[in-house]
Every structure is written in structure tokens, then in C-alpha cells.
Amino acid sequence: MRRALLMLVLSWPALVAAAADCAPPRRLQRVDGDDFRHGLHRWRLESEDPRALVTAHDGVLDIQAPAGLSLWWTSPIGGDYRIRFTALALPAPASAGVHAGRLSDLNMFWNASEADGSAPRQRSGRFGDYDDLRAYYVGFGANANRSTRLRVYDGQRRLLAGYADAALRERPEQALPERARLAGGRSLAIEISSRPATDADRATLRWRVDGRLLFEHHDRAPRLQGHFALRTTASRLQLRDFQVLQCR
Image (cartoon, rainbow, N blue to C red; front, side, top):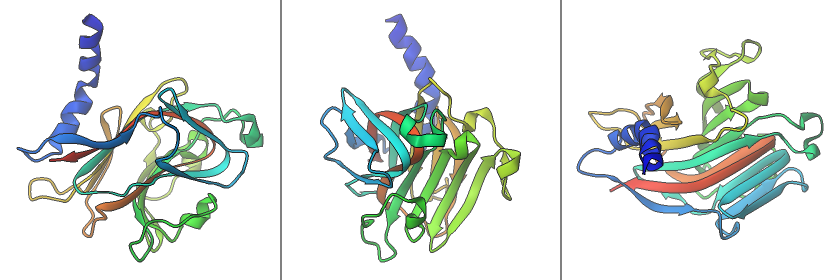
């Protein structure tokens, strides 16, 4: 009982923050997800290197990527929704060559489509092949854990906000704090919030890690539906408990 109460206290900031995003009397309800106990039939893999190893069993999605890799959730997601999962960064596999052993690139696309609104087509897994998508993108702990950025793809790839070490910093980025880095051996709770703006709350997207708001953005013409993908390169990631929730 004590342990259950402790877990509730530790998760309380995330629960409060997420609940505040739903305008009363609506509440978040789980509508889809993957517990990673039934294989990869809900996902589509695009890998730059055929040696990539992706498995889903015993509650864990394990991604070992020698090079660029995208893993698409095959069902579109839309409305006032949240995506949640936990992620653990591990040392990149030996197949990553000179990048073996690094922690890097817990990245993701969401509300992604082709320019005509259709579902993303099959691509090679090479990062540059995605430049013509329409999507939002966060690269968390990218560039060997030296940058974390929010971008929009709208015919060009534009920086909306970000953090980076001094050698990589772009305007208007800030210095990279520890909360915006991957932490070896520690799982991170990720939440993406996609929602229409209201008079009381103008934000159309929020991105949280461990219940703490890292990015918030108001888009005048927001993308509120599309596809989600995990994106990484030269890394190893383990994910658990992928959830899609909607305000209903």
C-alpha cells in the first residue's frame, strides 16, 4: 500500500498537468495503444540499415538502430488527444560503428501526412527523405544528447523552439538543461498534447517529459490529425505502455 501511494505521489504532477488540458466536463479517456505483448502488427518500419533490430514482447518495444529508423503507428490519430509512453535510452549497439555506445535521439513525428493530406508513404529511413512531410517533430537528446528541438514541417523544416549545447545552438535556442537530455539507465515519461485552441487556452501543442512542460506552441493553422512515428538514428531505445487518449 505504501509503495502504491508513493507511486501516485510521484506521478501526481503529470496527472494534474494532463487533466488541466481537458476543458471540463470532458476527461481524458484511453482510446488506443500498445502494451508491446503482441508483436509489431500495429507498426510499420522504415530503416536505413537492414541490420536494425526491432522487437516487441513482454511489454517492451526494443529498437536497436545502426542508422536512421522510423517506426510508424499505422492508425491515424486526431482530435483533442494525448500520446503517452515511457522510454529508456541505452547505449547504441555495436552495429552503429563509430556511434556505438552513445545515448541519442529519442525523436518523434506527430500529426504527420503528405502534402495532399494522405498518410505518409513508405520512405527509406534516411532523415532527409522526410523533409517534404507535413508534421510536428521533437528531437529529444539528438546529436549525441547535445540538442532537443521542436520543429514544424510545413513545406520546409522550421525550428519553433529548442535547447542545445553552445557549439550547436541556433537562434532562438537556449542552453541545454539536464531536463532536456536523455538520462542513461532512467526511464522518461513522455506526453504529447495536440488540441484545438480555446479562448481560455491558446496552446495547440504541448510536449512534456516526466510531467514537466518542455515545449508549448500556438499554431494559427494547427495540424490536429495525422500519423505518429518514433524516429531515431544510431541508438538503442526501449519503450513501454504506448497510450493514445482523447478528451471526451
